[in-house]
Amino acid sequence: MEDPEESVMSREDGDGGFMTWQEEDLVARLPGVMRARKAAGLDGLVGDLQAIVINTEREKLEAAVAELLAFTGLAIDEHFSTTRTQAYTLRIPGSPAVIVKSRLAGKNPFLPFNQAEKARKLPNTRLETFIFGCRDIDAYCEIQRERGVRFQTDEVLTGPDFRFIQTVPSPYTGNSLGFIEWTGQGRSFAPSGAERRPITLEKPGHSYLANIGKLDHTATRVRAKERNAAILEFLSLTNYHFDFAVFVKSLNSITSVARLTDDAFAMVFTSGIAPYREGEDAGPTENFIHFYGTRVHHMAFSTDDIDAVFAELVTHGMEFLVKLVGSREEGLKQTFSMPFPHTMIVNEYIHRYEGFDGFFTRSNVEELTRATGRQ
Ligand SMILES: [Fe+2]
Image 1 (cartoon, helix red, strand yellow):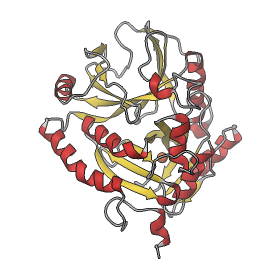
Image 2: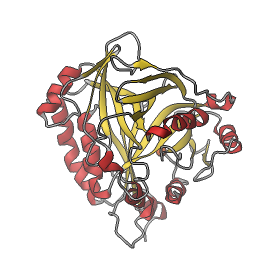
Image 3: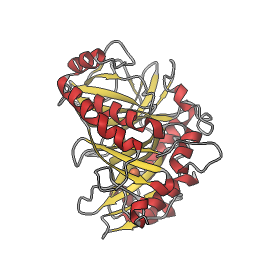
Image 4: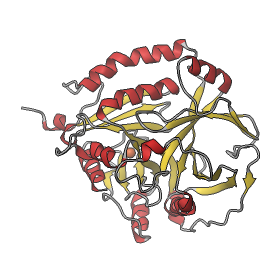
């Protein structure tokens, strides 16, 4: 008879007692990818996450920014536009920035990834890009082009404070990875020639918002059969390493974690174990992809005093997919909001006790995963 806990989850470090094809395939391919990255001279070139970029429909840009101001600790740092883009940079000290923008002109290269049944009503809305620091962008581009990586521009783009390039969207995730080499004194994301715009949106003065801190991780949902390709592609483009995976067999779900360092932003991929099949219960992850496409499902913000913050968010009208789960004893308390109407992204609020580095606890992983099936 199966150990009841083992039927719930198994870490991909060999204690699980069963190997899916995903584990066997990843174990076989991972060392080669890491060796090739090192041999190409990429180790040490790419650093920590500097920003994420969320694109919205043009008429929803201000509303999307207002949602983040009202329900996270983020505040507006800059507002600028070019002939092609209008953008707000939102920041919290010690966190990657969140850039919220809309296209004013030009083609949207992410459009093919925004066509799923429930996503196509907002065809330009997606968390599109993860921007990582890079200490030598020319060397990086040369090496990666040689390895077949395709970027969205032939040239590196410039601003007063940076040089920047980004990949075409990944076929596995629909996400692009950007690389920024800071060259100026400041940390502005405004490109050369951008016009500074006034900041008229106000951040609500609620004191509890100060307890919602840095971006801890995001979770990108990918198809079961593309899970390994997505992870290996991400590792080959960054200096991250594969950390571990947790399998929830009862809900057909794998959560896989890539890290740079223990305290840096974690890149999480969630997939099914078995693929989506029409008419069968594929579980919340594969169902989500069926309706919304591959995309970032949630952004997790590290939160202090999470009981009080949760109560205040409820009082101020926020709706949640699940109540606050976990405990100090288990190392973690967390919850998921309902998806934001103007970005379709869920906010996770996560309180880590004494540096706990997991993403859920044994007692609540099923409840959390199941809750995401409500959207
Ligand atoms: Fe999460």
